[in-house]
Amino acid sequence: MTGLTGAGLGVGVVGGGFMAQMHSRSARLAGARLVGLSSSTPERAAEAAQRLGFERGYGSLEELLADESIDVVHVCTPNALHAEQAAAVIASGRDVVCEKPLATTVADATALTEQAATASVTGTVPFVYRFHPLVREARERVARGETGRLLTVTASYLQDWLLTSEDDNWRVDADLGGASRAFADIGSHLVDLVEFVTGDRISRIATRTRTFVTDRAEHARVTNEDAAAAVVETASGAVGTLLVSQVAPGRKNRLHLEIAGSTESLAFDQEHPETLWLGRREGSVLLPRDEGQNSEAANRYSVAPSGHPQGYPEAFASFVADSYAAGRGASIDGLPTFEDGLRAAVVTDAVLRAAASDGWVDL
Ligand code: SOE
Image (cartoon, rainbow, N blue to C red; front, side, top):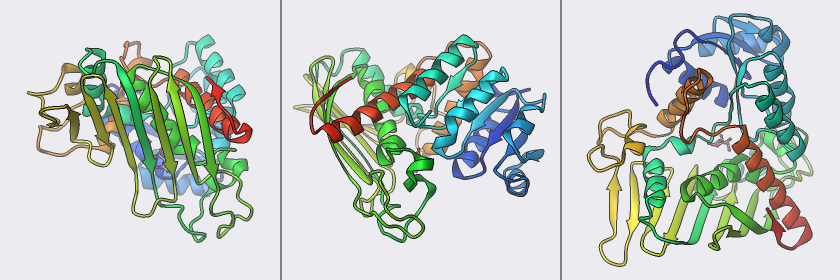
């Protein structure tokens, strides 16, 4: 969805880091008013509010929620704060866009999902890679039966920004980031994309996790994982592998998804989102994002004429625009909601349990 779905909406953001910047930029593009930003101290809030173009900074979420000109709140804080803050937003009657992971425990994610449903509040989670036009194209091809029966899935999400002991971030602190790090942070995107594109569900999982860098600049005895490897089975009987790492030199945000069906394979690379590989026994092709060659489902998210590259910022903006449209009553196909955030929490929990038990976990 493009367009000014946020026109007339007052937006509040909790947090002032990189994700807050992406959310604010997308809210502005949707035509919303950037009303207030809260952070851990009034000083930080004032600085971030000014940097990101908000009218006011607030020293706490309570103060932000007392501002009646705010209609929707984006939660962009460290993971361990999501559940409590999103619950407060829902309790105030506002729609909420909550960063992933929705919560660091399945119990909290379940409670939030139920709370949002009971309050009839729109709760969405930024699984933004769904909003690349060629991801929609891939999903469409599977749904139309062009790929045939799903046989195998090979999926990975590799980064290198936590490669060395000099690299540090709040995410390595399990109290702030959660018991799972790499899987909750980027494996959640991966699982979401696998299930979104295939329409199938992971039904069993066996995993290995590793924490290679246990002592970092400001954190000793790190416990949450740098990398996780999984073997999966799906409900339809397909098999696959997932590999997630934040310590893979040279890889930045290399989310790669390849599925093999009985008649066609599909491969999507998040770092090169303007082409989709269609693998065939004869005549494999690289399909470009091109309105003339893509489905309606893909074209809906094409915001620049073919040949002018679009990518992550546009996908993010489309997600936020769709979240606002849904909050205003539109029925949006493929919108990642709290149900999807809960699903990611359930799979992340299974990853940790499978690693600990050295066996298979059913989902
Ligand atoms: C950090 O690993 C991070 O910013 C993730 O939290 C995002 O979800 C991902 O899109 C990029 O990397």
